[in-house]
Image (tube, rainbow, N blue to C red):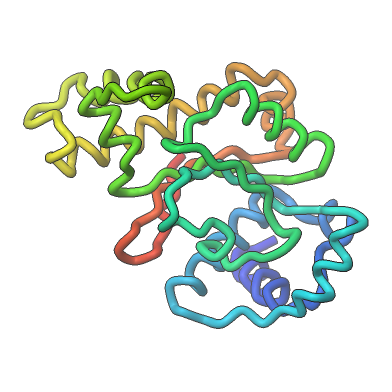
Length: 224
């Protein structure tokens, strides 16, 4: 499907009164779903209203679900994942944890979403001005937060290599680099630790991508 056709499908999908059927989900390709999310993000940025029959969608989704994508996001309250992509009930699986890293539990959730429930796209979604990223950079020590931040510290170490300048959370350029590296590490963790998802990606049954959400504009910049 061409990009303009995917964009039209995205618009039609926003207006549809009910959730996807199994047949409609099966007809989607990973690239089509990515284009749908990109189009939805543009609609979110533009402030376009979503027209949906939510009562009907609630009833329809109660007997089954056929989402398009699975998104791993930060816990941050300023990142309303479904709204960011102009999606609603039954459209996407969302897993959230501060710092949007992937662990065994989230990995199993992604395997369920893609292998068993048919999602065609995995998005690891980081965001600018992330408190977890800043805390990992500054090596904060506080209760259980210490262990959680250790999952993000590898991204800090990678970002520090060949980086000239202030390597603290006060340097927004460095913070952005850590944010991007953290998303890339999460994607690599998925591919390395889930033979199921790696095989699905190799067969083009799914696509795994990363993105950085801009708090100031609402835009998602996708990265390879």
